[in-house]
Length: 225
Image (cartoon, rainbow, N blue to C red; front, top):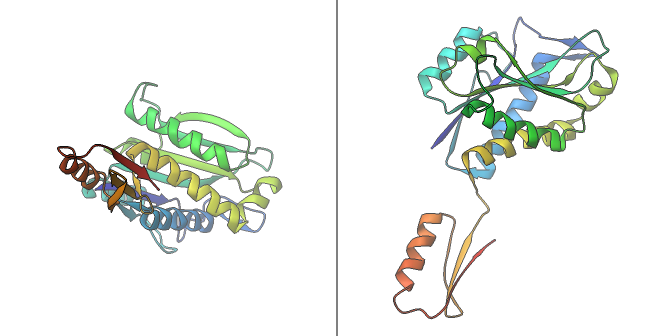
């Protein structure tokens, strides 16, 4: 079972960045809840824990301690940026001690690719920093900055529920690629000599059916739907 810890940044007494009638803490939570729902509804073999599911105050240490104690496989911290209304676009961070060949860096490459593919934002690149949630986690960790809340063009996207759902799906697609998660809807149908002998969602069960048929079958076909 893959354990994903999702951290909606800020919350409670800490609103995070503000601009264009939006508060970062609320956007972070909305995006994180959408990501959680996609992972749990669309994939098998994944558990999700969130640092918060409502508008509550939680320290950085509480978040990383919780993820470490749970034994998470990946820490995903979700944020929205701000910079005097002049900057735009998406960027993500891993800890600045990590090399490009590290597991965390390779995982970030996948996340970056999947998110940029769908978010319709300027690509500000892959970056590194000494943020607490990247430094104090004992598992690979990424922090995504999904646009600039104080930029009118980015904010127009950020306040759109359809955009939030699409970006959440981009995060989920990255996680699914990294951990080779099996979609709930994926079914393997096994045909032996032209007759369907079973339909399986579990790849091991599919292999078992194939092995059972091998001694006598003349033709075996496996279709994935």
